[in-house]
Length: 104
Image (cartoon, rainbow, N blue to C red; front, side):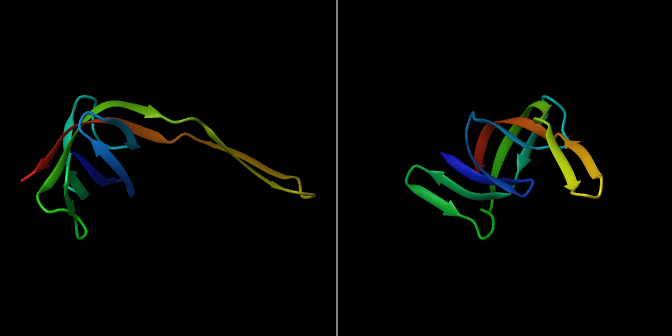
């Protein structure tokens, strides 16, 4: 059984027991949460597609850790003008484990 969920404007294909990184969520380590933005659920031969979401379908997630991604350096430059600007960015992630896919 797998499901396609939406979190942070991105879509993820998840199965039970899978661990994945999503954009930062306001949760603490060890907390559980239910996502109701389930776009598709497939159970062997049976496929349910939402319009836009599958009704009564939920995915239960457990927060495993909070982390930051690799640093991305942004460098702006204009020739002959002496303009140089350097910035850095580290995206924050939440690592979650899919504990259950529920269909009511």
